[in-house]
Image 1 (cartoon, rainbow, N blue to C red):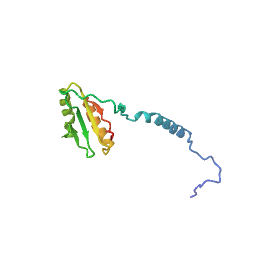
Image 2 (image 1 turned 135 degrees about the vertical axis):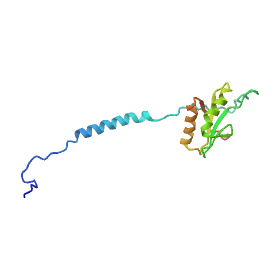
Image 3 (image 1 turned 90 degrees about the horizontal axis):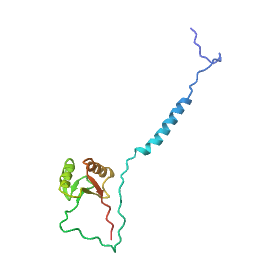
Image 4 (image 1 turned 180 degrees about the horizontal axis):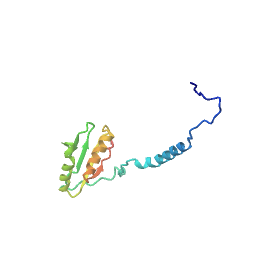
Length: 142
């Protein structure tokens, strides 16, 4: 019973051709490099310019309704005009409040301590109900 351990006969040894593998990997790399920037989610907002202290804003008319403000705190508690609202009722309450108003805008306020993900969840929740959301800028110290 004899076994051939090779080496002495000098036969052709098969080798793996890695060129097609490298080509496929490079094509996939290029595809991912092109597609990745397109997959990012952007939140576009218009930030108001800093007003001069000399220019006074006129007071609102006496019969004007207060604006609807949706607030989220760092614990994730949602409030509409300082009234705590459960997360599953936010859209219904906002739509009911906006149906009685001429301006259909909800102002969104989140503190610096609120996690970004929580703030985006609340914004997406409001936008899912076809509600126009305006983001309140941070108040500057005088």
